[in-house]
Each structure stands twice: as C-alpha cells, then as structure tokens.
Length: 179
Image 1 (tube, rainbow, N blue to C red):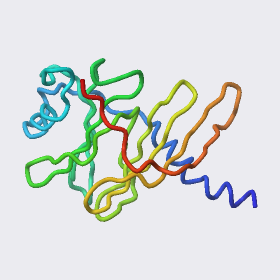
Image 2: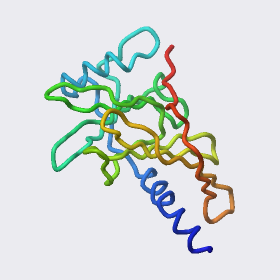
Image 3: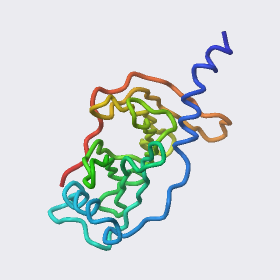
C-alpha cells in the first residue's frame, strides 16, 4: 500500500524538482525580436505606460520537434514581480506572429517533455509564502492551456522531505493584476 502512494506521488515530486531549475539570464526588451516586442508591449502593461526598452525580460523557447513553437516571457522588475512571482506570458507562434496562450503570475514556468495535442505541457510554480508553493501542470487542449495537475508543496524547517498534497485544480488561472 505504501508503494502505491509513493508511485502516485512520483510525478508530483518530479514536477517540483523540474520547476526549481534556474532560468536563463534576462535580455532587454529592446533586444528581443520585433514581433515579440510588439506583443509584450501590448500585453505586459504595468501602470499606465508600456514596458520600457531597457526592461529586463527572461525568455525561454518552447520547442517542438526541433523548431520554436513559442516562447515564455517574464518581465523582471518591481512593476511585474511581487516577491518571487512575476507576470509570465506564454506566446505561441503562428507564422511570424505570436499569439497569447497563457498569462499568469509564477515564480517559474517551464516546458515539460510531455506533449499534448502537439505542444509540450508546462510546469508552473507559484510561491505562496516562505514555506508553501503551488505547483501546476498545464496541458495543451488543442485550443488553450488548461491546468491538469495541481499540488501544494510545503517545506518545513528541519524536515527532510516536503509535504506534497495533490488537490483539485481551479477552473481558471490566477489573473494578472492590472494597475
């Protein structure tokens, strides 16, 4: 019986480990491709002004069969980030254009090796507080990314392994704060 419980928690443990990998260094908005700059200036509105050209943006490509199918973009300044969580935008390429597929606040969001309907699932981590994080796997439905696996990970001081509690995913994603 104990083996079955560990077997069921294994995907969640792998998800948590994958979500804690370090990201790439940030590039300036002005150094991104013009199509990506345009959609970020449209979608990443903080306060009443567009993002400045010197705004640092972490980007990570979403690869499918060796080609870039999209990009994850995370503006990195105090306007877009609250503690560890930053506004994060997932864009899918259609020809030379980018279409917004997911926008939310995350401490990290990474593509996974698992694909659904031709696109990789995404593993996201939202830092709730010093000890708790929400981990979510988003699967591509063919039309949009939807949460499919959700868990709360709690790390306590002097506790060797974290507590992982799988739970029902919310029907909608946390929305980005608009100021």
